[in-house]
Image 1 (cartoon, each protein chain N blue to C red):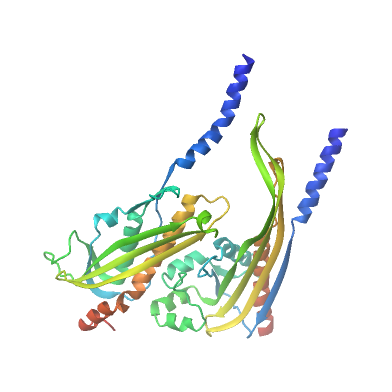
Image 2 (cartoon, chains in turn yellow, green; image 1 turned 180 degrees about the horizontal axis):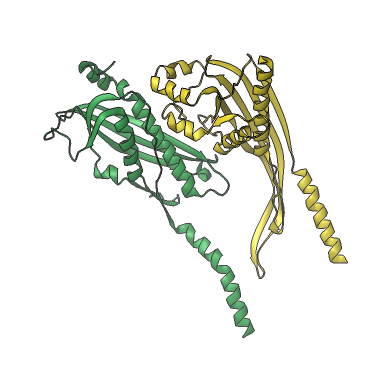
Length: 226
Length: 209
C-alpha cells in the first residue's frame, strides 16, 4: 500500500513536470508586396551561417523544408544542401548574397541563372537565428554505488528559439516580406536513480510555427492573386 | 566464495568507468573526409600545372600543448581532394607535376603551389561558445611557365559547426574542417583573378574578358 502511494506520487510528479515542459510560441508576419507561388514553381529555404557566435542550424532548415512539403498546400522545396552544392561557391557562409539586390551580381553569370531556372525557383527564403539555452539551474549528481551508477537531483533550463525569415522574390529581385517565430520553453530533468529528461520542444515548435507562417504567407498571396 | 564473486561483480561494474577515465589521456585521431562540389565559375583558358609538396599532401596537425586534449588531425588527403576539384573548374587543363619549372612536351602557362602556413582549432569547452571552429592559413604561390614567381598571397579558411546532441567531437570537427576547406575553395575560385599580380599577368596575356 505504501509502495502504491509512492508510485502514484511519483507518477503525479512526473505528469505535472511533463505538463510544465511546454513551449510558448510567438509568430509575426510582414508582407511588403503581394506574391504568388504558381504550380511548378519552387522555393529554397536556406540558413544564414555568417554569425560570429552562432549559426542557423541545418536541422531547423531541413525541418522547415520537410514541413512545407507536407500539408494541404504542399510546396516544391529544394533541399538546402543540394542547392548550395549546385551553386558552389556562391551560397557559402562568406559569399552568399546579403541583400536582395546582390542577386543581380549573381545573375551576371549565365551558368548560375541557368541552374536557378532549372529548379524553377521563384522565392528564396533566408532563415536567420538560433536556438540557445538562456538559463540553467539545479544540480544532478551521479556516482558509483554497489547497485551500479545512480543519479540524484533536479535540473532545469530555459531555451529560446528566435528565427526570422526574409522572403526574396527571385524574379523581381525584391524583398516581399518577413516571417518571424520566437519560441520559449523550460525543460526539466528530475533524477531519481536515472535522469528523466522532460524536454521542451523549443526548436521543433519554432520550426512548425515558421513553416505554418510561410504556408499562410504564400497561400494568402494565392488568394490575393485570385 | 560468495564474497569473491561479489568483488568480481563489483570490479566488472567499474571496468567501463576505468576505461572512460583512461581515455582522458588518449589521443584522438581524425582523418578528415568529405566531398567537395565543383565550383560554378568562369573557366580561364589556361594550362596549369599544380605542385603539391609532400608536406602538403600529408599535412597532419599534432596538438603539442600539454593544456589541450591530444588531437592528431590528418588534412592532407582532404585538401588535395579539394584542390583537385576546384582547379579543373578554374582552368581549362590541369596537370600535376613533381617540380616547378619548364616541363618536357607540355606548354604550361602557370604553375600553382598551395602551402599550409598555419592551422588552428577551438573546441566548445575552450571558447565557452557551443561551436567547433577551424582556421587554416594557406600560402598560395603562382609561377609562370618558366618557373618564375608571379604572385604569392595568403588565403584564410574558416569553418565552424555547432555542438549537437549525439554528435561526436570527431564528427563535429570533421564537419568544421570540410566547411573550412569549402571556404578556401570559394576564396580561391572567386578571388584568383583579382589578385593584383595575377590580374596584371592575365591582362598582359589577354586572358581577361
